[in-house]
Image 1: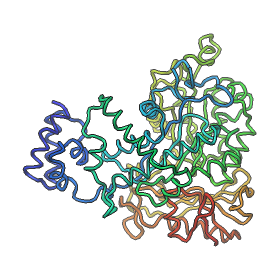
Image 2: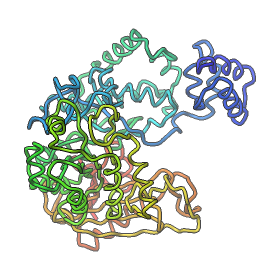
Image 3: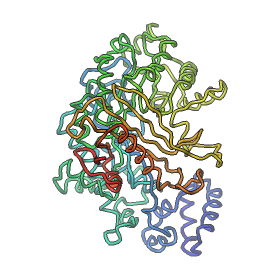
Image 4: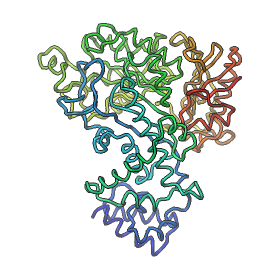
Length: 568
């Protein structure tokens, strides 16, 4: 019994009996048990596997409302082609051109899902984005709001022509996908039949000829017009599939005002910044070729330009003890020069072919074990403030690829278990998100709270809509330390982030009813504007994802360079 035999049996039954939604659920469940299918296929997956001659007949039975209603945010990670970092290579860094792991992107192993997808698509951003959107449609996931993450190295260090062409490819793919498969007349319904025919579905995943045909069709579409990156970005503001946020990875020497302004030009809203350590001797020893002051200057510049900052920190590096690691992590929140909005903690791992591997073999370096890393991070979690979100606690690298260090991919679960055993409560955003809540108390009423703190010589306000235990949405308001652009005057306030969780509430309804919220965003923006006015600020500037600018325009904002703004 296989998934294919499941489709061969269920499709004729649906065509004959035309079941309602409840009957269809029961039918799918029983046939999954019969055919040994572990995950119940979505209605869209059934449609994708229906023979062409029956698709028009089965479509109205399976899709009782426009596919457009499948809304939500999905991530598209797009990997740039392998290039050496401008400074060379850090002693722990795997990957890169002509590395022991092959010709793969710097700091990656070639086995990550996003790297494998990039390799299949020849590192072409247009093909990668189209491939990911195809996968989201086939698996029934949301695809109308996309968060783009550019991976693969220090993207701001690349030449302008490559950067522009790369970002153009991503935005053009989003725009073209919407134009190709949303019906022109109604403009709301996704044309699954046309989609299915274009991508030759269903298909054998090992059919290389089919992949080649699809890529040739897509490349022809990519080159149909000579629009520039600015045109494709502008077009996406009102597109069917919108980029609601764009993240770029960089080092602090390519994360200052000049690089920041260029990232703004390309629609970037969040920066992943590898600081790795707060200790000068450690940064020098591992070959970063920048200083602690570079980190501090970069963080300040990026903040004053409005970016959200996701800092990367690496405990377990050479020249550090457990106590130094813990103190370094704590310093991120006691030192106003850091205070990350988001944090990825990557315990140092050892890969064959790196200088660190040679040190380990000579007995000059011992990496943190899984147990040691989990114990350290669990201890650190008690110091994390409510305004920070811990994004990851381990690299997304198969454990068999490493020669030393953390050897489990479920490090977060091990940390959570330790926290429970030691009664450590983490106050970070991720641990309090309403969508992850397992112990909702419907008697708790959410309210607006404001946390003020100094950061990078400016003032931050973390405005949250939350209960005592759970957060439903938040805004980051900043009074910058100086004006780095004409749009940002001495009396300007910045909104660096506005985030409302999908399973939040609608004002006036049950506070913890899991419905998509219609008013928290406006509530948070109103409070931010009120705080700005009270502090004699005359203008509000928002670093908005390209596809979210229309939302802000409904609140009275208008385009202002790479931002949207409003006179208060």
